[in-house]
Image (tube, rainbow, N blue to C red; front, side):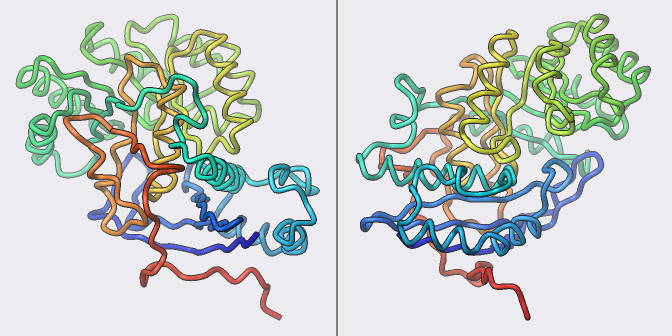
Length: 365
């Protein structure tokens, strides 16, 4: 087996802005696994502000455990039991990368597309939302109109700035496109009092749900809001910020759970989280972490088998990237993400690019 790592730094087409965060570029590590003539890929791309680990932490982990990795590559350690070989838990995004690469290898070895390898009855055609970032407000209606003409029917509006402007935009969208579904993501910008005041201005049915409304996302605050609010509540960052995410899920403080596989970790952890969420009657939306085409494709695969069918998934973020490893824009049609039928993750991965460089795991002397 041959295992190699590459680091990338890709620019966005324009600055991506959400409440409290601003991104010009996206960085990550690509894993290439070659075994028995089959090439497989995974991606570790911690998301600043969400992930517990940084990209530097991933590099340090790989360097610190280079000997174990060499043993694994040499065939002395079982290829599918990698987590047993490390003395400490893997950072979440690295576990996700390794599980993606191993699943890609197994799916390709059986000549199956990833969604059919992982699931018995996956959906190949997934409705997706369009994300409207904070920015120049005068452009938003034009952008939404463009997406509407492309077939999108669900719009996720980044909020948390000036709610008067945001409220005005919501009403304008409702007037111009009555059939549109609107989601708002407050990115933990509001106090409890502000959340009550802002959400009380929205009639039930005006928005599909509000994601992360609370600046202080303590479970008891979520519970109070959940009990008083007519608008469905979704949690995202709070799940990853919690010291005990399972307890937060068990307390049933929201209606919808946003799952970012890159941040949750490997497939066993993700399936465990999904089962717990379904047991407590959450509806599930999968979203990307603004990563490259490898991570996006794996997220789409997981959404095909685990996402709630009547909720549009958050997969259409490839158009935000000026450069990418695997372009999936041709898979987007009329507001839907169409999973490819070719084996594994289903898209060619090109690593020859100035923004991609081999990662040297050796520490400097």
